[in-house]
Image 1: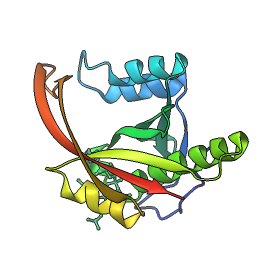
Image 2 (image 1 turned 180 degrees about the horizontal axis):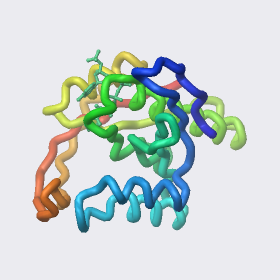
Image 3 (image 1 turned 120 degrees about the horizontal axis):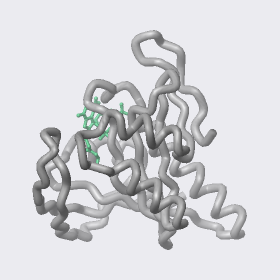
Length: 170
Ligand SMILES: CC(C)(COP(=O)(O)OP(=O)(O)OC[C@H]1O[C@@H](n2cnc3c(N)ncnc32)[C@H](O)[C@@H]1OP(=O)(O)O)[C@@H](O)C(=O)NCCC(=O)NCCS
């Protein structure tokens, strides 16, 4: 377990963050639109060693996830929480768990300074506000990404997103 339980408020539940298991993939896939295959793909990236696929469970149910890359510095990608579970600390628990994994790796490698990078869409000021509140700083480095995804109806869509890189060092 990477993140400690964050409270037992009945309205908010108990949040635990861990590396994704095969059982978590099945549970996440059941909630995905047909053909999306995101959880399976992220789990395959974890199995291949390129990321840690972190899942947040609320009262045992996986409701959010993020991928921590093995890059230098590492990046937290594809952070997402189920719409009905947002605003209850699940995203914060995932970010904290990623930071804790990075800190463990820094100390194991004898590295004095840790850093974690995130890319935030310019059209996503609430996510940027969350990261800034947690100590991430804007870098002024922008990138444009075009990607395909499967929407809620199961149709493949293409989107282009402009992101700014934020970084936290400690
Ligand atoms: C951004 C996201 C991961 C945050 O997770 P979360 O569990 O809602 O976050 P927390 O409860 O720990 O923190 C709440 C804060 O998250 C931010 N936030 C961003 N989008 C939000 C949303 N749709 N609902 C609630 N909070 C959101 C806000 O700063 C909020 O603080 P506020 O209530 O004071 O405005 C989640 O809202 C989400 O999945 N959004 C859609 C995908 C996305 O934007 N991913 C981020 C890519 S960088």
